[in-house]
Image (cartoon, rainbow, N blue to C red):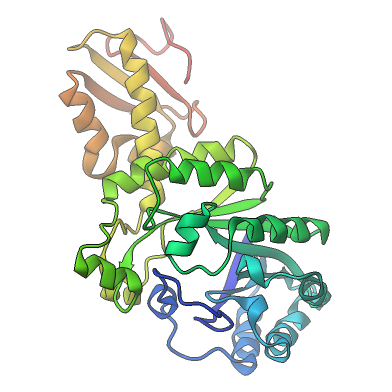
Length: 343
């Protein structure tokens, strides 16, 4: 059964640190403070509408398990009745790696907790220190082990392009996160938001964020790295929020960042297949109907790229192909004769 999410953002609440990139108010778009009464009101309204799927209730945006215990319990008590009645699939939260203990996880599970996402951001201690994270890579490893031991689903979040990260840093962090056996991952390119330390560093010339092209080149290869190991990448790039766009100063923000990454991977795949054809060849690229936008690329960039390589490629939708399957063949070949294997 498909799952949705009813999310409540708790900006900065519970977090003992102020990271270089952090302005949760801008990122989450929250204005009205979250309180148990609002949670109950919004959940009652959401679950009064017949659901075609079970939704999870999520507490995001801050460091949920770092809240004072009484406050955290008030939020959980407001949500738990909907789990108890079978209306919700359970509760998930995001938190800091150093905010996880056995006692906290026991409490979270008591109120219907099913999944914990850790804001690891990097597995390089130098990057963590430079960006004021206040925890080390070993804390992420320890917290992940506790979450597994409790039988909860583990989610991990990483940020690409932070100050101090080298060109191979994202790949190295991803591989170390993969070793922790997460169920889900979120990948965010670092952006510069007004009111943050990154904004000060950017204005002073100390920090230069990745360009959008650089961010895509670093993040795109991480998608198959995780998915081929059965780890779901549930988000790439920040949510499109009006408050974020108002406060965005610089950096590789794009509302369709995942599609840019998927398109980049398709381009690389087709580039390799083109080695079997001479430049100047007229070709047809057969694709599943749902793949047209990603294959053509943002503003048809992939088609322009292949044209610059000397190939004229015509996209043809083929309903017999599954999503992700492609066939590249000379444009004068018939449907039934001489087809090349899908790749």
